[in-house]
View 1 (cartoon, rainbow, N blue to C red):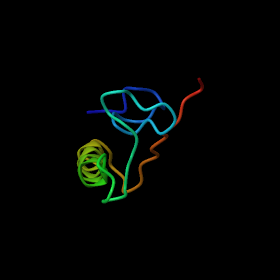
View 2 (view 1 turned 135 degrees about the vertical axis):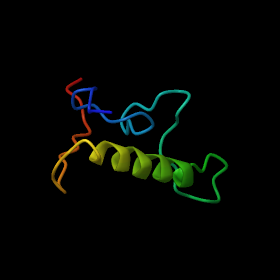
View 3 (view 1 turned 90 degrees about the horizontal axis):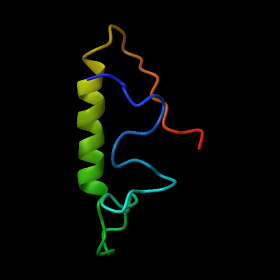
Length: 67
């Protein structure tokens, strides 16, 4: 697993133009679309797996795009 998508955010974390099947990050537990629990767990797992491919404790993790 490498950062193969250039500097775009990982799946489920496109903050500006969320994909229809993914939705935006909703952290209000009273909202019927609440998804912060599984999105946070997914992101922690993603970064943990990604960190196994680097020799340092520091990883630059760009999350943006030029369009």
